[in-house]
Image (cartoon, rainbow, N blue to C red; front, top):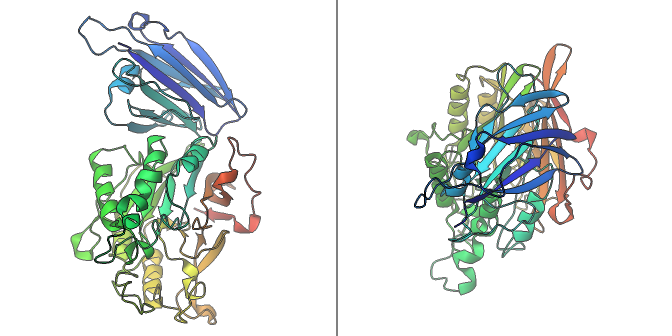
Length: 492
């Protein structure tokens, strides 16, 4: 029986990074054994895969430990990661476990390491892993990111089951083979295209499997250590073809995220503010990651608010066929946002705290994409005013927001208005990004957040770009040029 385990090292952010892997006890290793090895990973050679064998301690023992340590060197600075690792954990973990390792408190190094392990963890770069009773191999993966400049992705308005349907394996392959891939991907609404089956619909083409965006796309990304933060939009609430309960799926995924810790989002995911009196029901959630540079620490919180940041649940005023009875539901999102920001403000140890709401309906919905002549069809000015009031009194700084809804093949920076746009008094200071849609073909919106020091203060630089996923290669060479008018630089 094999006691082997694969070890993957992947440079996700650096021009050059030096990684030394060495065993802590050579007696634990079989053949091929682990020897002290230094890997120099660069933009041109960013991936390394090795396989090691461990020696069992007895003829009937099913475990075989293989302890090792990892040291990294970036730009002449060196640090040993603050824990030892055991390849056996990669071979015998029934679930996939993920966690982040950050530099020691005394270190000025600029790195974050995503560590993933488990028998069911898939290898990157289309490598095939042997499995089965005899070759029961596990996997241990180290992915190296920057701590001062972090990247996430947005894929909105996927409308799975319409143009996009069937296996999305090619999309998964493209994303995992992108060297400087996003740490996670947000899908803010309209995951499906009218998912709830009308009563009496027995057409087999409309069965749930056809509409299973989780089995066809999201599960594959998460098996490759790309967590997905999913939210519901108006189409996910409408009656149409299919058989999915998106609200229920997200609710169950949130329960699983909490129960299994770092399985989906190793960023401290929280639904602790789901007070029953404002109707969240576990749909909204929050996750975090830090930015750090030269000793300055910023905690970034992402708030998944689903359809829109409102409180009132109301029917769609543009609906004439009574299939959109839940078309504009907010499920207490605004109260959830307020409660979550208050909770976040109590977290110690950071110089600054900032927030980024994620939801579906865009800021410009009162002028864009409405065929019924009703500027308040999707989001009332009263609810927009309520959002402004919450943000004005927020104990943390909201630096931007991301949303979709409008089916446009570009990114647009939009401003929140609380009334008719002809009156300049209705313009607020809050802006956000309507991202490029995926309804006709999958697109990846790539969002870079960078902590910048300037004149003794700190700013967060926000740079959004997008690309058709089919055009992605293994490097960043194919990414579009940065449009300066879309960039934001927010003073903290």
